[in-house]
Length: 235
Ligand code: UDP
Image 1 (cartoon, rainbow, N blue to C red):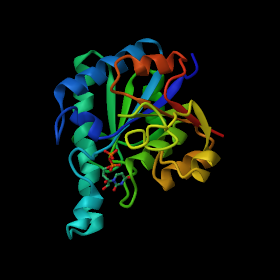
Image 2: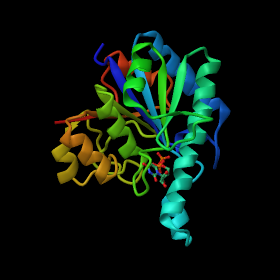
Image 3: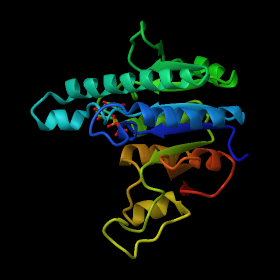
Image 4: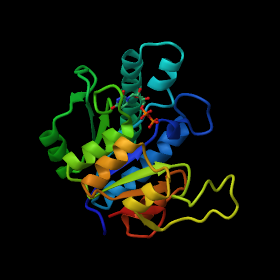
């Protein structure tokens, strides 16, 4: 198997399923089943979850709210999603721990790197909530940061598209999908994978990113089994 320890990044929007807002219990249960299967294969899994299905700091700020205050709300939204995912995973019998970057001790452990790594070694899924704990960042940045910290082999970014295309496939019929692409080419071609802060952090630390469609059942398992799906960004 190509990876021993992975960091899975799920956006908040992914949890919405067919809904316009919030959490779709069917979608989250499907994710949980798939993650359980990967755990059963002996893969160590950490997860960073977004909050966009509940609250985004930028949209709060654009409506006149103080940006830092709005980002705090966004970070709390990721903790809510983390709790939901934890619950769905435990429902399937997977052992989990939720660690938060902002202290919220009654509901989640604080983020402690060594402890997170120990959980992973024991086969527990570790969910990182609260993003980086700082405003003006995204959960993509949190995902890259945590992946580096816990020495994950790769970051798997589960999205609604099946990889990185030369242009927007919904607007351009000639768009082609890359199987692999270098960090440099992503930048020179102006392609969008993650926000610049997150992407640069990944590039500087030579942490590969795989973009794949998490909504297609079986894709996560295919990826961790070494099948070439999605797009891999590497040095
Ligand atoms: N956020 C933040 N710092 C972080 C991570 C997230 O302030 O380190 C806030 C920010 O307001 C963001 C919101 O949390 O809009 C939700 O995260 P994100 O937009 O990354 O979620 P996703 O798009 O993955 O659902």
